[in-house]
Image 1 (tube, rainbow, N blue to C red):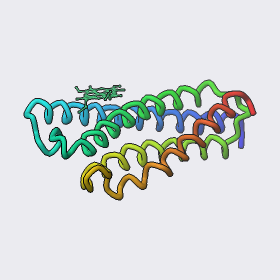
Image 2: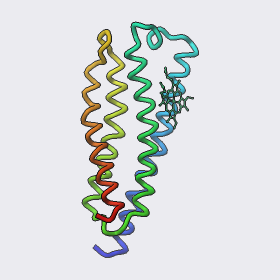
Image 3: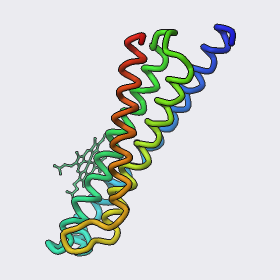
Image 4: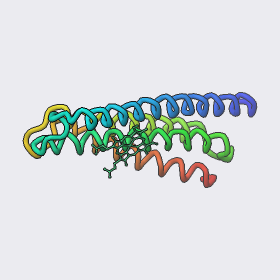
Length: 149
Ligand code: HEM
């Protein structure tokens, strides 16, 4: 692949992650507004002591979603400044893993809070461990890539 088309491809990937990052940040800020509203109307489904697990799960969905959106934006900027020695396969894999983490972690927390079993979250929480592994791998690949390895 020519140097020019390689740069172009890197730019496309960065632009895609910028778009995903900013739109998902908006989505998770909106979830924050929804949680705020549940507080405002003192909704028992969210605030009753018996529903403490749901509140924890949805707060975690909001917080992880917002923070991972910011990580996505940081990844996009990193792609722009990364050394050329970071090959296409490494970038593509890191990109997919960052996206998987952004979907799996907040979705797992949110789904885990939809149906709760006393103090335990629902089955949706099973999405969280693979999301955590994806994030760990994505951050490792990104750190290695921007270090020129
Ligand atoms: C980048 C932006 C944001 C980040 C990183 C963020 C992160 C967090 C974190 C870490 C918590 C958990 C705090 C704790 O329990 O100790 C939290 C809770 C909360 N956030 Fe955000 N937040 C952001 C923006 C917003 C916005 C814009 C709103 C709404 C206007 C909002 C509404 C809430 C509410 C209502 C809670 C408490 C939920 C509860 O305990 O029931 N957040 N947020």
